[in-house]
Image: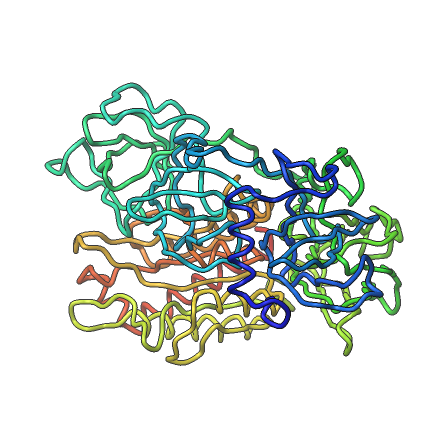
Length: 591
């Protein structure tokens, strides 16, 4: 924030006037009026403004991530910027510098009529290109919008009466325009994105045709053909069905990618996963955090392997386990590797090697991967000053199943959020909690460490649930729910996971996420004898924000009178809990 130096209102007004009207003059261009000025965009949450070019100079204020500052001059790796008529200096590796061309009159909105679709639960629309700008509205998942212009990773959009800026990574942009609704040819590589909570799948193009199933909001299905306002789609099991065209958004399907294989070893390297300074192009500056990892030490004692990761700043991290082959992944936020080799070959009885690299630039994530020789238990601890992270790796046999594993159990809904309710008044939040507590008891009996999002009737925010799981570095995340539908005849059991090709962090876990869902769904359908709806992908908040393999179980339908009665019985709840536990055990055993 700049309130301690310039005052927020004045700063934003000056930036918007200076940038929006294109009146910036770049002193580095001999004082001439520039057609293209330079702008520095803050790449960190709190960017320090200093009185001179270097950390030895005093702080004069801060700006938020996404704030844009006019560049006046450069000295080494430092940029002099202008804010509200005053100047300050910022570290060049903490900003993204780009040319911005002065727009001619009437140029706004001429960037094209590209159509995009919101791909997150609720998308914030802001007054400017960055999180430092105020909200002007929100858009629901699946909403169509038109892109007017762009600035870095932000897009100016229009949807209905709403115009503003949105983060580009929260929308799906097709590569070509959407075909007209009257088109009856094959889908042409398109996906239908569901815009409603429970969309009916029908056997033909019209409401007069029978319901063949349902899909949840956010699910994407390949388009096969069209008939009037109806769209024929292909389901995960290969069969086709019809959906109402006004309840879906169609986008171009991305190029298919193969699930991660053992040859890729879970790292999924891309061109952007290089060390800072590698593959640099003149005129571009990749963001490099100020904090750095100064040492990674590997040692072995009493059948334990210890890996110490030391930084010159406090560490923020999360971890998760991958299998086939066995790996342990550590993500470190806003810190870079300082003279740390990309591969440490200090082999021990449990660790084959240690690999380091940059996983993503925005947010900046430095990644360390332990290539394990076998299944192992990893205990993570942080020093008192939070600058040294210690990994304690010890032997564990995967034939032991759950012994030593940390399972995060999430009982859906709770407190002021009752979830769905059956005709007799049975509440989803109560059923979910009872099953969750039974699962926990069974897991503990088999040696697992269980962590809850809630163990009683309280409200917990969706994002708080996964924040707790990520903070605990749980091995898996299991969310337990009961389903509901507007059609009382709908019944059955389903299990969801989420690992889309568009999200590298999730897609690298594709094998593990799907295998966990498969194992649990198999046990549930065998134990409960209900209709097998199947294993499905859905962009649920708890699935996309959990860093470890995660699933969401829909045990049965409260809206179905028969299944409501079952869900209310202690016997059915116990069989459900036993099935979920068996599925989790099968996942860890690799069977």
